[in-house]
Length: 301
Ligand SMILES: Nc1ncnc2c1ncn2[C@@H]1O[C@H](COP(=O)(O)OP(=O)(O)O)[C@@H](O)[C@H]1O
Ligand SMILES: O=C(O)C1=C[C@@H](OP(=O)(O)O)[C@@H](O)[C@H](O)C1
Image: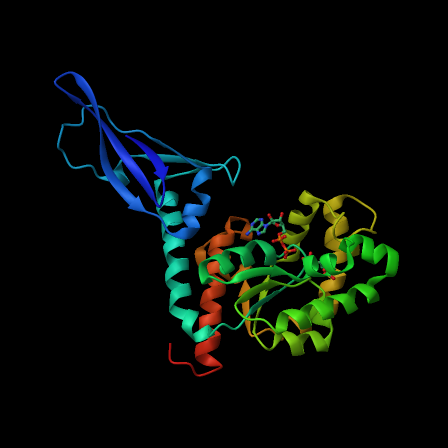
């Protein structure tokens, strides 16, 4: 059996021996959610099945031994179960976003959390499934000033950047239907909360060790606050992140909803958070937003 992604679907084809001739015919097609559609370019399916399939016999896909190489996650070979999980995740994202969309009523979602916590990565997925636009407050500052965040810190200092960050958040707070990835330090200024409170704030809570691992893998050039310590990249990042987190922990706790990767990993029986994909985290974010809307606002979802 082989498979081909096309349009909104993945089509599976069965090759059978009929009267000694090899016949390839469509077996089954699966509709894909928008999230999966977007990612399907990266999916290569290699489907192996025992030879000798009789013409007309029913094909049971889960038993077909589907193996996938998913280029977005280098080196990972997903088994059949994971293939279905990625379908499931796409469907769950779509379902959950549809459930809460009308109750959000166009309100913006502000993602807060430490540097590298996945605000941008998860934010893009959320915007996609909710039919919202995605905005990154750092990018807005960079566009307004014509300089990178690192240059702004270097040329004018952190205070100047924080002013510009507040201006960007004020501008964003006047808009609707946005998922906003905020800079990790946006939470320290009370005025920013005034702006973000016009929408729903979600804290992505990632263990510092995982953050240091991610950040040391991509480098600290674009994150000036992590650029000064001595030592190897991981230890430098972890030391600085720990200090910053101590200063900010209470501010992050102000968010309306919290997505704790540690709690998620524990619930799913994972030893650490490294198996939690951005899609799974986005689903949890939608769950937590729903919980907030139900509990805190008394919405009857
Ligand atoms: N769930 C995840 N698992 C592993 N790596 C992730 C995950 N989410 C994000 N990353 C990676 O971590 C880095 C920082 O993510 P990013 O979304 O830019 O964070 P932020 O916007 O909060 O600074 C990126 O290299 C990204 O690919
Ligand atoms: O934590 C912080 O103070 C900062 C986080 C950065 O954004 P990300 O959280 O997107 O990396 C950026 O705003 C700036 O480097 C300062």
